[in-house]
Image 1: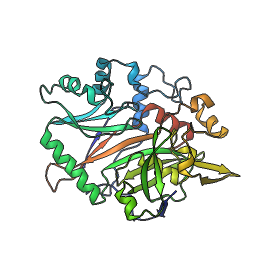
Image 2: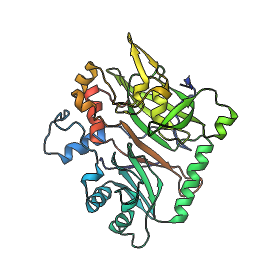
Image 3: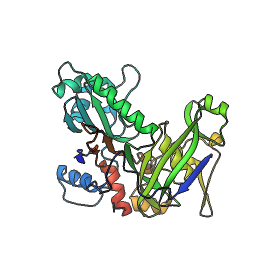
Image 4: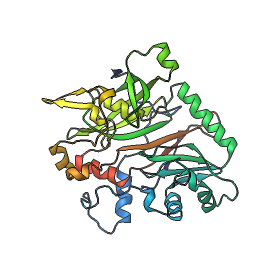
Length: 352
């Protein structure tokens, strides 16, 4: 397998131990590749910085974020060009920083809006890039682009076929507030989108009827595996087998282990006398995630800083088909952003 490393930049059924090994994607051999979550990202952070200090920088706890309102089009193109993982033929893969939306309203600065300039900057001439696969605005990680419509169509069919065959093509890494009850398993939940108080929220549906399915309720599935745990948190690999808005956030909240920095769904998880339980999703409004004092101390964060904690969800690995049917898949890797690596350092979480 070829591996490419990027530059840094209520109705739930949980089944534990459901397969013999971690789902490695279509045709991926069992041998582990050198894809250490935080190591390469930390090394790159140290190479760019002037300090040799290995500990976390408390004065800049969330470095590595992108705020489109603070950059020009030209600056954004430069950022994206520096974030390119690989460029072969019509395909361009980059490591998107958190905070950059892929699409948006007319006039907004988005990935899609600067693709013409990025195409020129990468020497593609009149062959303008289009998005094939991308992480969302609040998620960092890999984005796949193509300057050839036929190649884009071929890859989109590959991803669609893999999803129907329940073969994972992406792996996210995440940090959770709380530790899952089992070390690995799958999460199945019926989800729907509801517009509540002006916000679109994902709501679980218990025992959906045929009418519910026809009206937009979707049965969703994700795999998870705990990689490391400590300080009441866990480093988790996540593989969505279905596509639904905020699926991974909703799934981990149903596990009573919301993602660190999830200011949308973490409020659904309450704690009384040390026991966690779910609050009704329909009546629980989003709010800033509340972390206990011990965790704040480990993260070296003040409550006001914790209120700005970014979502710790990173599209770490993407599988592409080989050039020929019998060829092994190509595995693209994107190291973690610096704020994510800082969190792992503070919590003492390491990839094993």
